[in-house]
Every structure is written in structure tokens, then in C-alpha cells.
Length: 215
Ligand SMILES: [Fe+2]
Ligand SMILES: [Fe+2]
Image (cartoon, rainbow, N blue to C red; front, side, top):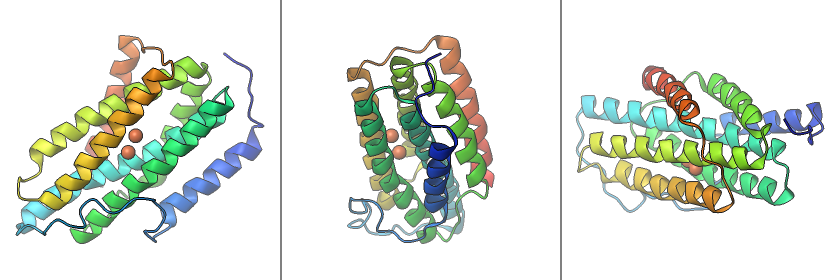
């Protein structure tokens, strides 16, 4: 385990302050990029289809809350200043995803997961643990997380109706970004995680996915 470089409580308070802003800000001017669905027409969806798509977007929104927490925690525990900066920049990019998922949920007359604070706190803790093993494992955890998100988005893209081009445009842009985050982490020197760790991560993400789908 490496030495604790962050000054404990102060940084944790700053990170949680940022978390609360993420969870409670309702404006949509935080992210830097345009809404990918903006130019896509709304498909004639049935009530049931809207509910199913919204449930998937609620899962993706919960995942983006978790991404915020992971990146913030990992930036606090990173050894190198360069990695800290990269992590904070990636967290900013993930804010776009958070906003897009939230916007689509609103368009579908639905709501984000009621368990957002739980997703944030749990992921923050996992990020601190991953970061405590040093930068190469920190990056390895990040890369594996992003690859799992890419596979998960692929599954969602198979489930979303073909004519729901608004949702598809959002998920496709997110997929592109997550893949970039994964490969950037690899190029920065990520260690490949042992298979049992990957399996544990996959199980945790399944629990979150199944829960956020409903609440
Ligand atoms: Fe994301
Ligand atoms: Fe990402």
C-alpha cells in the first residue's frame, strides 16, 4: 500500500461537496458538449416502451453517478499529478453523460434512481481502495471499469428500439467516450487486473444494474 498522499478529511469533504452538487444540480449547462439527441426526431413509442427505455436510462444514469465517484476518489489517491489531472478531466467528461441520461429520462417522463447517494458513496469507497494500490492498479481498475461499461452499453443498444434514435445517439456517443477512457488508461500504463477481481467488479455492477432498473 502506498503512503496516503491526500490530506484525508479535507479532500474527502471537497470531493463530497462536488458529489452533492452533481446529485442536486438540475441545470444542464455543466457539460461542455451538445446533447447528442438534439437533432434526432422523437419516435412514436408506446407507454410500455417508454418505461422500458427509461429503466435502462436510469441504470445508465446510476452508472454515471458511480463514474463521478470513482474518478473523484481515484484522483484523490493517484500518486502522480499528471494522473490526478487526467482523472479530474475524465470526471468532467462524464458529467456530459450524466446530463444526457438525465435529460433523456425527463423526456421519457421518468426519474433517476432514488438510490443515487448510495451509488455515489459505494463507488467512492471502491475508488479509494483501488487508488490505494498505486497508479498502475488504479489505471487498471479504471480501464476494466470502462470496458465493462462498453459491454453493458452494447447490451442496451440491442434492447433499445431501432427507431428510438434519440436514445441511441446518446448511448453511441457514451460508448465512444468510454472506450476512449479505457484505451487512454491502458496507454498510460495500466496493469491488467486479475480475473477474480474482474469477476467481483462484474457482480457488483450487476447488483447495481438490477436495482437501479427498478428504483
Ligand atoms: Fe460515462
Ligand atoms: Fe468513462
